Length: 171
Length: 119
Length: 346
Image 1 (spheres, helix red, strand yellow):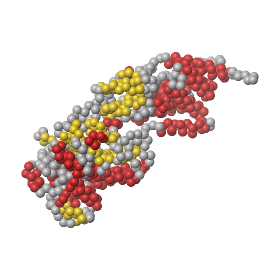
Image 2 (tube, helix red, strand yellow):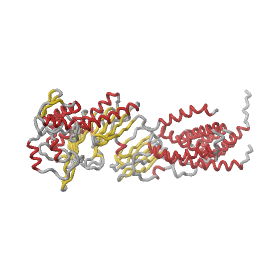
Image 3 (cartoon, chains in turn purple, blue, brown):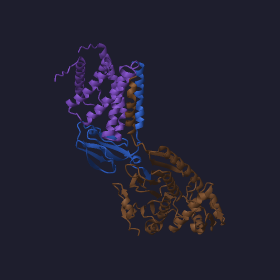
Image 4 (spheres, one colour):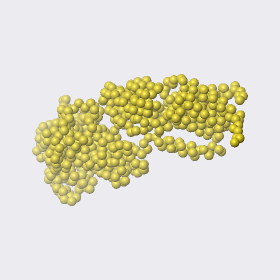
């Protein structure tokens, strides 16, 4: 049995960016958030950069690796938090994919980031409400979470685009 | 920012007041609280009580206190304790939620507690 | 475009997520009729059927409100005029059934529910805008002298004849009950299994809310919130007569609209009576009759009228109820009123 697993350059890139995203994610988790469930999601900056530089598939890998490894590191793997995080990431990836493949001439980082962020938040809300607490209190959080999603989506996009201009990547 | 970006920004911003009005519930005088644990049906407690109610959630117990027409979470088996930090609540439509423990407390008016009022 | 491959899947997921929100099959309607707010709740997947049923009901209520109006010119006032002539006439079918039922209940209530004392109710001002003063004793005495009762109406098929020139129909104590009861029956006939019709506080329900029975709160007559609650099992109605519904105050004393036909004055021993029964018209008439009967005499009357679930709150604030009502009613915690359970009405 002489099958060799080749580690391609692509793999290396994905691994590097995923590692970066994981570090940011873990660091961010150590900061308390004033409002329940609201985090800037700074790791998404990495996802955005990867999306624009290497395409959707890359971004999907980086994002899902970040969610999985991040939760393993934080000890939340398979917990409700993990599933919420996962569903949010899947939804935002879907949104990013739609825009990326269908509407690229008309949208830039800002639009994709905002839509991804709002989708992430909405999916988490719905999953929390549907699977965990079917309580109207959850739905009442919607306007706040959407507003935060828009704000941080824009925020992350601004950071990502200013980094992108200056970044030279050698992997 | 491209035109599509502006469009998305505007639509997303519109969602905020829209979701606000859609999730607004009748505010009225708080008359009772509904406690939900996980996906079990809610249990209603009238507000005239002065009592503490202990419910068992996923991680452990959460204790709700009703006193003088107000409600608060006194203790809960979660890490963030945000539900406790939110303090006393007294307006119908308010909610106290301990997400990790899957416990929700909803303050409701008589209109929401009952399907009809007879007088 | 490659995005179009995903679109159906995405839309499907989104739709599934959205339809998980809120109770999709509970429909609410509101309108005004019978001089009050009518609220209808229908539970069912067929929304257009619910819409249709509610619309029909509001039209019916409006029509009945006009036909049975005690003082505005209409079918009822015409019938009263014809009764006063003391000659045989053919009654209009819109009022005939209700008059027959009223006579029956009046007899069962030993005349305490009296559907023909319109003139007495009129002098108290409860027809139209309330006056500020009670009528004089002379006027009341004069009316009591020849006070008509339901026996003064002869019924032969669809023909009626009155035996008292003072006959004036006022069906306020039974009209709403009859209308709500027949209304809910019509819903059943349309195939609706779960509905709640609330006409200004008096209500009938069929089926249930979905996750639980229809839950009804009974308002505290003193005005402070809810005094008790009840869950409707099977199909039933809850009707309450209270001294707080229509009244005026004169020189510090309250005069309300439930007139005792024996004295000509508002019955004054009781603050409210709540009756639970399958038959809304009966519950309505009984709550009035028992209110007038008072804490000392209501029991034989309840038995005669065939109602066994009764809760009465007297002027001292005592809550008196039948044992079978005690099984159904849940008093609010912190209740400070004295509770008396009567003997069973055997």
